[in-house]
Length: 453
Ligand SMILES: Cc1ncc(COP(=O)(O)O)c(C=O)c1O
Image 1 (cartoon, rainbow, N blue to C red):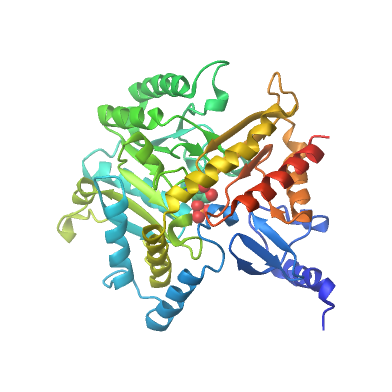
Image 2 (cartoon, rainbow, N blue to C red):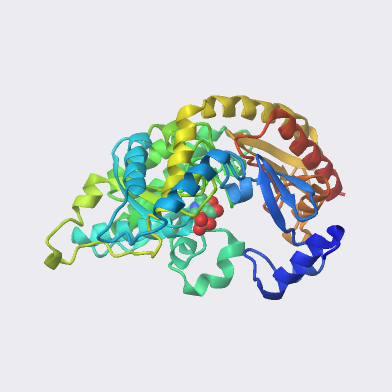
């Protein structure tokens, strides 16, 4: 029998013998603990020795209604006894049909067709390929490029990484990637001193227009993360940019791909972030919160016009070609249906507004901190930008790994915070309480004190 106080170490040792973890320099685990989580409940995770961690980042932004959510678990159990999986070419099943109907009902107007895939990056691959293939089917094979924003992140498969601009993930694999045209992000933090977020958006739209004038003829689509560039450091921008982007895409004949993988399902205050600009993109990519954080699933919603461009006699060779074995998995679709049922049955967005206001109040004092350059928030995403020098906003060098100090401090104080470089952020499950938000902010604040020393 393993001594109860050694259970974490014993499981970690077995893990490290065979498992290679994502987004990790495995050597780090010589000094940083690898934590075996055996149970989850509400916003909490519990390790093998019974220690608890408040999940301040919704386990990579997936979880909405708590870990091991009883409603989703019950629906899954029933689905597992009914139909766990079936090939999705030539066959269909009620959970996928029902889910597609509901997504179309909830999505911005005009998005009427749903293509399922099984993770966020795969959804991006689908949207990129579909956009390119649409133009090809229309006789515009010269359109082969994409416009992405600086600081964007859309996933790490080669296509998704191609349209991403986070150096850490991209640099090494750059020789393998497509080269997007990069448009300057409307990120308000990067604005000129005194420039309001709406003014940054307007200026950046002008720059995008100039790029489109040069590149629209060879461009399939502009891809953006609506309102918040998450992995790029929770950088936030004004909704006007999305409204202007819609107009520019129409004027220049390129598609608008909205990657709502991280920001969809209520994160930014509305069910979908695009709603805040009252725009409908040509493609909307969904994943993460789609299943409440229970199972991998993604969906690309698009227009009837897009669909029609592929619809022809088989011999025309116009069909969209993309297939994953687990496309439209019934278990994942069922988890998604139960997630949407919770949105229907409970005042989720109203409650989030109250929680977000509480979070904002609790973060307010950090604005005065000598090493905090910015505290920003969009709905249930809040971020604190740490800097070496407040006056010049000079960042701490990345190699100093200040954020890692906050992470380690959090683990010692019952909180899972996982800063992105110098950005400490909060993206808790929606079931978090005000007292739990207080806990997260208190631990983050003391962690920041230690990290900036
Ligand atoms: C905006 C955005 N797009 C795409 C992805 C990729 O999703 P996945 O990790 O499921 O491949 C992510 C993941 O963090 C994301 O934040």
